[in-house]
Amino acid sequence: MARAYDLTRRILVTGGAGFVGSHLIDHLLSNGHEVLCVDNLFTGSKRNIAHLHNHPRLEFMRHDVCFPLYVEVDEIYNLACPASPIHYQHDPVQTTKTSVHGAINMLGLAKRLKVRILQASTSEVYGDPAVHPQTEDYWGNVNPIGLRSCYDEGKRCAETLFFDYHRQHGVEIKVARIFNTYGPRMHPSDGRVVSNFIVQALAGEPITIYGNGSQTRSFCFVDDLVHGLVALMESPAELVGPINLGNPVEFTIRELAEKVIALTNSRSPLIEMPLPADDPQQRKPDITLAKTRLGWEPAIPLAQGLPATIAYFQSLRAA
Ligand code: NAD
Ligand code: UDP
Ligand code: UDP
Image 1 (spheres, rainbow, N blue to C red):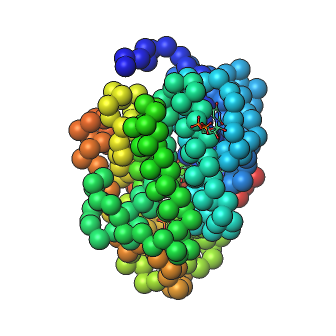
Image 2: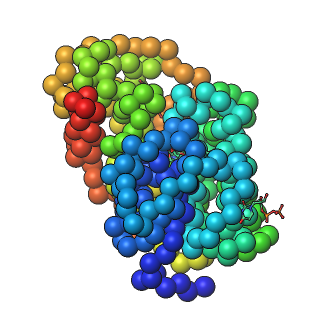
Protein backbone atom coordinates (compact mmCIF):
# COMPACT_ATOMS: atom_id res chain seq x y z
CA MET A 1 0.00 0.00 0.00
CA ALA A 2 1.40 3.44 -0.90
CA ARG A 3 1.74 5.84 2.00
CA ALA A 4 2.08 9.59 2.08
CA TYR A 5 5.49 9.96 3.68
CA ASP A 6 5.58 13.70 3.29
CA LEU A 7 2.81 13.88 5.89
CA THR A 8 3.72 14.18 9.52
CA ARG A 9 2.61 11.31 11.68
CA ARG A 10 2.01 10.45 15.33
CA ILE A 11 4.67 7.87 16.08
CA LEU A 12 4.94 5.52 19.06
CA VAL A 13 8.48 4.73 20.21
CA THR A 14 8.59 2.06 22.92
CA GLY A 15 11.85 2.17 24.87
CA GLY A 16 12.11 5.81 23.83
CA ALA A 17 13.87 6.91 27.02
CA GLY A 18 16.74 4.53 26.29
CA PHE A 19 19.97 5.07 24.44
CA VAL A 20 18.85 4.33 20.85
CA GLY A 21 15.21 5.35 21.40
CA SER A 22 16.09 8.85 22.59
CA HIS A 23 18.18 9.50 19.47
CA LEU A 24 15.39 8.14 17.28
CA ILE A 25 12.94 10.51 18.98
CA ASP A 26 15.27 13.47 18.34
CA HIS A 27 15.32 12.54 14.66
CA LEU A 28 11.54 12.02 14.36
CA LEU A 29 10.76 15.31 16.10
CA SER A 30 13.25 17.17 13.90
CA ASN A 31 11.35 15.80 10.90
CA GLY A 32 8.14 17.35 12.19
CA HIS A 33 6.45 14.24 13.58
CA GLU A 34 4.57 13.87 16.84
CA VAL A 35 6.07 11.28 19.17
CA LEU A 36 4.56 9.20 21.95
CA CYS A 37 7.40 7.79 24.06
CA VAL A 38 6.40 4.74 26.10
CA ASP A 39 8.96 3.47 28.58
CA ASN A 40 8.95 1.85 32.03
CA LEU A 41 12.33 3.47 32.80
CA PHE A 42 13.93 0.12 33.69
CA THR A 43 17.19 0.93 31.93
CA GLY A 44 16.23 4.20 30.30
CA SER A 45 16.02 7.55 31.97
CA LYS A 46 14.05 10.76 31.63
CA ARG A 47 17.49 12.43 31.49
CA ASN A 48 17.87 11.05 27.95
CA ILE A 49 14.88 13.08 26.82
CA ALA A 50 15.23 15.96 29.32
CA HIS A 51 16.43 18.29 26.56
CA LEU A 52 12.97 17.80 24.98
CA HIS A 53 11.11 18.82 28.16
CA ASN A 54 7.97 20.75 27.21
CA HIS A 55 8.47 19.95 23.53
CA PRO A 56 5.00 20.51 22.05
CA ARG A 57 5.13 17.35 19.90
CA LEU A 58 6.50 14.89 22.50
CA GLU A 59 4.37 12.98 24.98
CA PHE A 60 5.87 10.65 27.59
CA MET A 61 3.96 7.71 29.10
CA ARG A 62 5.43 5.50 31.81
CA HIS A 63 4.19 2.04 30.92
CA ASP A 64 5.44 -1.54 30.77
CA VAL A 65 4.87 -3.07 27.31
CA CYS A 66 4.17 -6.44 28.95
CA PHE A 67 0.72 -4.96 29.58
CA PRO A 68 -1.81 -3.99 26.92
CA LEU A 69 -1.62 -0.47 25.56
CA TYR A 70 -4.58 1.29 23.99
CA VAL A 71 -3.45 4.46 22.22
CA GLU A 72 -3.95 5.97 18.77
CA VAL A 73 -0.83 6.27 16.59
CA ASP A 74 0.13 6.04 12.90
CA GLU A 75 3.33 4.03 13.24
CA ILE A 76 5.22 2.02 15.88
CA TYR A 77 8.92 1.52 16.60
CA ASN A 78 9.23 -1.28 19.18
CA LEU A 79 12.53 -0.79 21.00
CA ALA A 80 11.52 -1.59 24.58
CA CYS A 81 13.95 -4.16 25.98
CA PRO A 82 17.08 -3.94 28.11
CA ALA A 83 20.01 -4.37 25.74
CA SER A 84 23.16 -4.77 27.81
CA PRO A 85 24.06 -8.19 29.24
CA ILE A 86 24.23 -6.88 32.83
CA HIS A 87 20.76 -5.40 32.60
CA TYR A 88 19.02 -8.15 30.66
CA GLN A 89 20.48 -10.84 32.95
CA HIS A 90 19.42 -8.94 36.09
CA ASP A 91 15.82 -10.18 35.75
CA PRO A 92 15.92 -12.72 32.91
CA VAL A 93 12.27 -13.73 33.19
CA GLN A 94 11.22 -10.11 32.79
CA THR A 95 13.57 -9.82 29.78
CA THR A 96 11.84 -12.66 27.95
CA LYS A 97 8.43 -11.28 28.94
CA THR A 98 9.37 -7.86 27.60
CA SER A 99 10.37 -9.30 24.23
CA VAL A 100 7.50 -11.77 23.92
CA HIS A 101 4.53 -10.17 25.72
CA GLY A 102 5.75 -6.77 24.54
CA ALA A 103 5.76 -7.96 20.92
CA ILE A 104 2.30 -9.51 21.27
CA ASN A 105 0.84 -6.31 22.72
CA MET A 106 2.51 -3.99 20.23
CA LEU A 107 1.53 -6.27 17.33
CA GLY A 108 -2.04 -6.38 18.69
CA LEU A 109 -1.98 -2.59 18.73
CA ALA A 110 -0.60 -2.42 15.16
CA LYS A 111 -3.23 -4.93 14.03
CA ARG A 112 -6.11 -2.96 15.56
CA LEU A 113 -4.85 0.35 14.17
CA LYS A 114 -3.70 -1.13 10.81
CA VAL A 115 -0.35 0.63 11.14
CA ARG A 116 3.21 -0.29 10.32
CA ILE A 117 5.43 -1.63 13.11
CA LEU A 118 9.21 -1.97 13.27
CA GLN A 119 10.95 -4.38 15.62
CA ALA A 120 14.41 -3.65 17.04
CA SER A 121 15.81 -7.15 16.76
CA THR A 122 19.45 -7.96 17.25
CA SER A 123 22.55 -9.67 15.94
CA GLU A 124 22.19 -11.88 19.03
CA VAL A 125 19.66 -13.93 17.04
CA TYR A 126 22.77 -15.32 15.29
CA GLY A 127 24.21 -16.40 18.67
CA ASP A 128 27.86 -17.45 18.46
CA PRO A 129 27.81 -17.50 14.68
CA ALA A 130 29.24 -20.31 12.60
CA VAL A 131 28.95 -18.10 9.49
CA HIS A 132 31.07 -14.98 9.09
CA PRO A 133 30.12 -12.26 8.29
CA GLN A 134 26.49 -12.84 9.21
CA THR A 135 23.92 -12.69 6.43
CA GLU A 136 20.19 -12.50 7.08
CA ASP A 137 19.57 -16.02 5.77
CA TYR A 138 21.80 -17.55 8.47
CA TRP A 139 19.60 -19.18 11.15
CA GLY A 140 22.05 -18.77 13.98
CA ASN A 141 23.81 -20.77 16.65
CA VAL A 142 22.02 -19.93 19.88
CA ASN A 143 22.15 -21.70 23.22
CA PRO A 144 18.50 -21.97 24.36
CA ILE A 145 19.31 -22.47 28.07
CA GLY A 146 22.29 -20.22 28.79
CA LEU A 147 22.62 -16.87 30.57
CA ARG A 148 22.16 -14.91 27.34
CA SER A 149 19.16 -16.98 26.23
CA CYS A 150 16.53 -14.75 27.86
CA TYR A 151 17.59 -12.01 25.47
CA ASP A 152 18.54 -14.06 22.41
CA GLU A 153 15.55 -16.40 22.46
CA GLY A 154 13.19 -13.61 23.50
CA LYS A 155 14.24 -11.62 20.45
CA ARG A 156 14.03 -14.71 18.22
CA CYS A 157 10.49 -15.40 19.45
CA ALA A 158 9.59 -11.75 18.85
CA GLU A 159 10.75 -12.14 15.23
CA THR A 160 8.55 -15.23 14.93
CA LEU A 161 5.57 -13.27 16.25
CA PHE A 162 6.24 -10.43 13.82
CA PHE A 163 6.30 -12.78 10.85
CA ASP A 164 3.20 -14.69 12.03
CA TYR A 165 1.22 -11.47 12.57
CA HIS A 166 2.33 -10.47 9.08
CA ARG A 167 1.34 -13.77 7.44
CA GLN A 168 -1.75 -14.47 9.54
CA HIS A 169 -3.16 -10.98 10.08
CA GLY A 170 -1.56 -8.90 7.31
CA VAL A 171 0.22 -6.57 9.75
CA GLU A 172 2.84 -4.43 7.95
CA ILE A 173 6.10 -5.33 9.66
CA LYS A 174 9.76 -4.30 9.50
CA VAL A 175 12.41 -6.31 11.34
CA ALA A 176 15.85 -4.73 11.85
CA ARG A 177 18.71 -6.87 13.19
CA ILE A 178 20.82 -4.30 14.99
CA PHE A 179 24.53 -4.94 15.58
CA ASN A 180 26.61 -3.35 18.38
CA THR A 181 25.79 0.33 18.49
CA TYR A 182 27.47 3.03 20.59
CA GLY A 183 27.32 6.76 21.17
CA PRO A 184 26.30 9.49 23.62
CA ARG A 185 23.60 8.49 26.19
CA MET A 186 24.86 4.95 26.61
CA HIS A 187 24.35 4.12 30.26
CA PRO A 188 27.74 4.60 31.99
CA SER A 189 27.35 1.48 34.11
CA ASP A 190 25.52 -0.86 31.77
CA GLY A 191 28.65 -2.92 31.23
CA ARG A 192 28.81 -2.68 27.44
CA VAL A 193 32.30 -2.61 26.11
CA VAL A 194 32.46 0.89 24.62
CA SER A 195 30.98 2.60 27.68
CA ASN A 196 33.05 0.45 30.08
CA PHE A 197 36.33 1.20 28.35
CA ILE A 198 35.68 4.95 28.09
CA VAL A 199 34.52 5.25 31.70
CA GLN A 200 37.55 3.26 32.89
CA ALA A 201 39.99 5.22 30.73
CA LEU A 202 38.66 8.58 31.92
CA ALA A 203 38.87 7.47 35.55
CA GLY A 204 42.41 6.10 35.08
CA GLU A 205 41.19 2.67 36.15
CA PRO A 206 42.28 -0.61 34.55
CA ILE A 207 40.61 -1.41 31.21
CA THR A 208 38.87 -4.76 31.67
CA ILE A 209 39.42 -7.01 28.67
CA TYR A 210 37.33 -10.16 28.96
CA GLY A 211 39.28 -13.17 27.68
CA ASN A 212 42.39 -12.32 25.68
CA GLY A 213 40.65 -9.59 23.67
CA SER A 214 40.89 -11.44 20.36
CA GLN A 215 37.09 -11.62 20.02
CA THR A 216 35.72 -9.17 17.47
CA ARG A 217 32.80 -6.76 17.22
CA SER A 218 31.77 -4.14 14.64
CA PHE A 219 30.63 -0.85 16.12
CA CYS A 220 27.97 1.38 14.60
CA PHE A 221 27.57 5.01 15.67
CA VAL A 222 24.03 5.68 16.90
CA ASP A 223 23.24 8.40 14.32
CA ASP A 224 23.98 5.95 11.52
CA LEU A 225 21.71 3.36 13.12
CA VAL A 226 18.85 5.85 13.47
CA HIS A 227 19.09 6.70 9.77
CA GLY A 228 18.95 2.97 8.97
CA LEU A 229 15.90 2.38 11.18
CA VAL A 230 14.02 5.27 9.60
CA ALA A 231 15.02 4.20 6.07
CA LEU A 232 13.68 0.72 6.81
CA MET A 233 10.42 2.05 8.27
CA GLU A 234 9.90 4.21 5.18
CA SER A 235 10.81 1.52 2.66
CA PRO A 236 8.20 -0.17 0.44
CA ALA A 237 5.77 -2.47 2.26
CA GLU A 238 7.16 -5.65 0.70
CA LEU A 239 10.53 -5.07 2.35
CA VAL A 240 9.78 -6.66 5.71
CA GLY A 241 13.29 -7.86 6.57
CA PRO A 242 14.93 -9.16 8.58
CA ILE A 243 17.64 -6.75 7.58
CA ASN A 244 21.03 -6.25 9.22
CA LEU A 245 21.88 -2.73 10.40
CA GLY A 246 25.40 -2.24 11.65
CA ASN A 247 28.87 -1.13 10.75
CA PRO A 248 30.81 -3.84 8.92
CA VAL A 249 34.25 -2.60 9.99
CA GLU A 250 35.46 -5.22 12.47
CA PHE A 251 37.83 -4.65 15.41
CA THR A 252 39.19 -6.92 18.10
CA ILE A 253 38.25 -5.90 21.61
CA ARG A 254 41.94 -5.32 22.34
CA GLU A 255 42.15 -2.91 19.38
CA LEU A 256 39.15 -1.04 20.75
CA ALA A 257 40.84 -0.73 24.16
CA GLU A 258 43.98 0.64 22.54
CA LYS A 259 42.00 3.21 20.55
CA VAL A 260 40.15 4.41 23.64
CA ILE A 261 43.40 4.76 25.57
CA ALA A 262 44.99 6.74 22.74
CA LEU A 263 42.00 9.08 22.33
CA THR A 264 41.68 9.78 26.05
CA ASN A 265 45.45 10.05 26.68
CA SER A 266 44.79 7.65 29.52
CA ARG A 267 47.44 5.83 31.55
CA SER A 268 45.04 3.00 32.37
CA PRO A 269 46.61 -0.46 32.16
CA LEU A 270 44.90 -3.27 30.22
CA ILE A 271 43.92 -6.22 32.38
CA GLU A 272 42.42 -9.56 31.33
CA MET A 273 39.36 -10.95 33.09
CA PRO A 274 37.37 -14.17 32.55
CA LEU A 275 35.35 -14.33 29.34
CA PRO A 276 31.58 -14.43 30.08
CA ALA A 277 29.67 -17.60 29.12
CA ASP A 278 28.48 -17.86 25.50
CA ASP A 279 30.38 -14.71 24.52
CA PRO A 280 30.39 -14.69 20.69
CA GLN A 281 33.94 -14.92 19.31
CA GLN A 282 33.31 -13.00 16.09
CA ARG A 283 30.60 -10.66 14.94
CA LYS A 284 30.34 -8.59 11.78
CA PRO A 285 27.26 -7.79 9.72
CA ASP A 286 26.93 -8.41 6.03
CA ILE A 287 24.99 -5.26 5.06
CA THR A 288 24.59 -5.97 1.35
CA LEU A 289 20.81 -6.09 1.75
CA ALA A 290 20.63 -2.73 3.54
CA LYS A 291 22.96 -1.17 0.96
CA THR A 292 21.06 -2.43 -2.06
CA ARG A 293 17.46 -2.24 -0.77
CA LEU A 294 17.64 0.82 1.50
CA GLY A 295 20.58 2.66 -0.03
CA TRP A 296 21.91 2.78 3.55
CA GLU A 297 25.37 2.31 4.93
CA PRO A 298 27.15 3.76 7.95
CA ALA A 299 28.93 7.08 7.35
CA ILE A 300 30.63 7.59 10.72
CA PRO A 301 33.82 5.61 11.38
CA LEU A 302 34.99 4.71 14.88
CA ALA A 303 37.66 7.43 14.58
CA GLN A 304 34.84 10.00 14.47
CA GLY A 305 32.21 8.35 16.67
CA LEU A 306 34.52 7.48 19.57
CA PRO A 307 35.62 11.09 20.24
CA ALA A 308 31.96 12.20 20.26
CA THR A 309 31.14 9.43 22.74
CA ILE A 310 34.17 10.23 24.90
CA ALA A 311 33.07 13.89 24.99
CA TYR A 312 29.65 12.75 26.30
CA PHE A 313 31.18 10.72 29.12
CA GLN A 314 33.52 13.62 29.95
CA SER A 315 30.47 15.87 30.27
CA LEU A 316 28.89 13.38 32.71
CA ARG A 317 32.03 13.46 34.85
CA ALA A 318 32.03 17.26 34.84
CA ALA A 319 28.34 17.47 35.83
P1 NAD B 1 18.43 0.71 26.46
O1 NAD B 1 18.46 -0.24 27.61
O2 NAD B 1 19.17 2.00 26.59
O3 NAD B 1 16.95 1.04 26.03
C1 NAD B 1 15.88 0.17 26.21
C2 NAD B 1 14.70 0.97 26.73
O4 NAD B 1 13.57 0.09 26.90
C3 NAD B 1 14.97 1.60 28.10
O5 NAD B 1 14.59 2.95 28.09
C4 NAD B 1 14.11 0.77 29.05
O6 NAD B 1 13.71 1.49 30.21
C5 NAD B 1 12.96 0.37 28.15
N1 NAD B 1 12.27 -0.85 28.60
C6 NAD B 1 12.83 -2.02 29.01
N2 NAD B 1 11.86 -2.90 29.32
C7 NAD B 1 10.67 -2.25 29.11
C8 NAD B 1 9.32 -2.63 29.27
N3 NAD B 1 8.97 -3.85 29.72
N4 NAD B 1 8.35 -1.73 28.97
C9 NAD B 1 8.68 -0.49 28.52
N5 NAD B 1 9.95 -0.08 28.38
C10 NAD B 1 10.93 -0.96 28.66
O7 NAD B 1 18.96 -0.11 25.18
P2 NAD B 1 19.28 0.39 23.71
O8 NAD B 1 20.71 0.11 23.45
O9 NAD B 1 18.74 1.75 23.49
O10 NAD B 1 18.44 -0.67 22.87
C11 NAD B 1 17.20 -0.33 22.25
C12 NAD B 1 16.70 -1.54 21.46
O11 NAD B 1 17.63 -1.86 20.44
C13 NAD B 1 16.51 -2.79 22.31
O12 NAD B 1 15.35 -3.47 21.89
C14 NAD B 1 17.74 -3.60 21.99
O13 NAD B 1 17.49 -4.99 22.13
C15 NAD B 1 17.99 -3.22 20.55
N6 NAD B 1 19.41 -3.40 20.20
C16 NAD B 1 20.37 -2.54 20.67
C17 NAD B 1 21.71 -2.76 20.35
C18 NAD B 1 22.80 -1.85 20.82
O14 NAD B 1 23.97 -2.12 20.54
N7 NAD B 1 22.52 -0.77 21.50
C19 NAD B 1 22.06 -3.87 19.57
C20 NAD B 1 21.06 -4.74 19.14
C21 NAD B 1 19.74 -4.48 19.45
N1 UDP C 1 -3.60 -5.11 22.42
C1 UDP C 1 -3.15 -3.90 22.89
N2 UDP C 1 -3.61 -2.75 22.31
C2 UDP C 1 -4.50 -2.77 21.27
C3 UDP C 1 -4.93 -4.03 20.78
C4 UDP C 1 -4.46 -5.19 21.39
O1 UDP C 1 -2.34 -3.82 23.81
O2 UDP C 1 -4.86 -1.71 20.79
C5 UDP C 1 -3.10 -6.32 23.05
C6 UDP C 1 -4.20 -7.18 23.60
O3 UDP C 1 -4.20 -7.05 25.00
C7 UDP C 1 -3.86 -8.58 23.18
C8 UDP C 1 -2.61 -8.45 22.34
O4 UDP C 1 -2.45 -7.08 22.06
O5 UDP C 1 -3.52 -9.36 24.30
C9 UDP C 1 -2.70 -9.19 21.05
O6 UDP C 1 -3.80 -8.71 20.31
P1 UDP C 1 -4.56 -9.63 19.29
O7 UDP C 1 -5.67 -8.82 18.70
O8 UDP C 1 -3.62 -10.25 18.37
O9 UDP C 1 -5.04 -10.81 20.21
P2 UDP C 1 -6.40 -11.12 20.94
O10 UDP C 1 -6.90 -9.83 21.53
O11 UDP C 1 -7.28 -11.65 19.88
O12 UDP C 1 -5.99 -12.11 21.97
N1 UDP D 1 33.89 -6.83 26.92
C1 UDP D 1 35.15 -6.64 27.48
N2 UDP D 1 35.27 -5.82 28.55
C2 UDP D 1 34.22 -5.16 29.09
C3 UDP D 1 32.94 -5.34 28.51
C4 UDP D 1 32.81 -6.19 27.44
O1 UDP D 1 36.15 -7.21 27.02
O2 UDP D 1 34.42 -4.41 30.06
C5 UDP D 1 33.77 -7.71 25.75
C6 UDP D 1 32.69 -8.76 25.87
O3 UDP D 1 33.19 -9.93 26.50
C7 UDP D 1 32.33 -9.00 24.41
C8 UDP D 1 32.54 -7.62 23.76
O4 UDP D 1 33.39 -6.90 24.65
O5 UDP D 1 33.22 -9.91 23.83
C9 UDP D 1 31.24 -6.85 23.54
O6 UDP D 1 30.54 -6.84 24.75
P1 UDP D 1 29.18 -6.03 24.95
O7 UDP D 1 28.63 -6.41 26.28
O8 UDP D 1 29.40 -4.60 24.67
O9 UDP D 1 28.22 -6.55 23.78
P2 UDP D 1 27.84 -7.98 23.21
O10 UDP D 1 28.61 -9.06 23.91
O11 UDP D 1 26.39 -8.07 23.47
O12 UDP D 1 28.21 -7.88 21.78
